Length: 424
Image 1 (cartoon, helix red, strand yellow):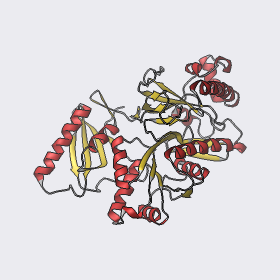
Image 2 (cartoon, one colour):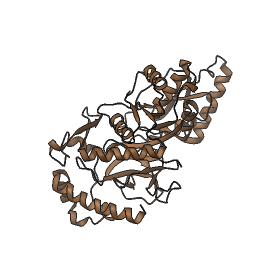
Image 3 (cartoon, rainbow, N blue to C red):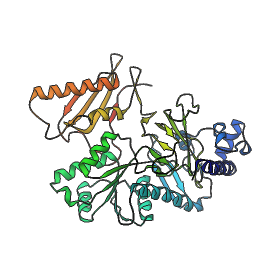
Image 4 (cartoon, rainbow, N blue to C red):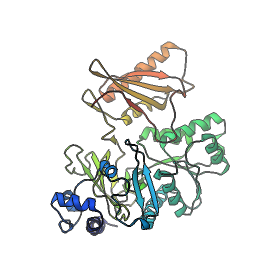
């Protein structure tokens, strides 16, 4: 679809959505009343700036079903994500919502080159987390075979991967690296595996990690993007060109705003990603602040798709560390680590405030073949890593080279940062 036709579709769907939430949710009716607007004031996406934002706090304050726009008898699925309050962020779906979500994931998988001949191994968690079941239905919808193995029990994962002939692996990139290490340690020749594609998401990762995954697993690694509040994975996906993540903007309209002023930013500028549902029935959200930091590009992709392309997620505005006035993202640390062939991409960054000064220390694993008792070699490597981090961050980092497999692994989203400062 050309951009003009797509814009007409978005305008129409937005008008319908604003009227829908106004009529069916007291939350948005009140928010729009407080903003002094009515559905008649929204003629298309050019008027989005008039609408109030929605935040995760709004979802928690309306727990569990305060933002539901349909009678509960029409809700066929309930998912949720963990929250700091002890209550999950609830996401609900009608039958039509599940069909839309499935279609978005099928678009993603076909863009990766997957089809009905493939065997998918879904190593995302099943249950309240959207990853497992979302990927599952998307893969089945293109006629592929699905192994619903979920996360954990890595030895069983590897056995099924080899015995069943898994060709597409779906999991977080950090767990894929964990599986790659486990395959190497198992002694099973890589030639006995049929892997060819990887669909990795749920956490930020870098081009260097992509190269590492492709080398270790012998696959083509693709990024898939999503968030539970929109539907789950499949909000966006890479194509064969891998020059950005195409967003399904016929269902999820994206904006980029300044995370501090909340003013819209122009194309190509990095800011906070904001989404508005255009077709969701069960729990539609207007201008939902994702906290993800990225930029958008609207020129047509070489693959032929006209959907907007999103840069890799730099980090989250609420995950960004401010160290002595400098913005630091975990992805910057990871990019440096992956420059060194002696290091594994398993690390833990600890931030502390000592004598009123912020200090960073980094534990990073050595590869087994690089682990040595040669003190001079280890000191030299530690110095090289420290210097490179100083170049990238503009800050000093106390680097510790630790033994292989000494940092705790995760089967889901990896935890890479411990901030011990009391910043309240």
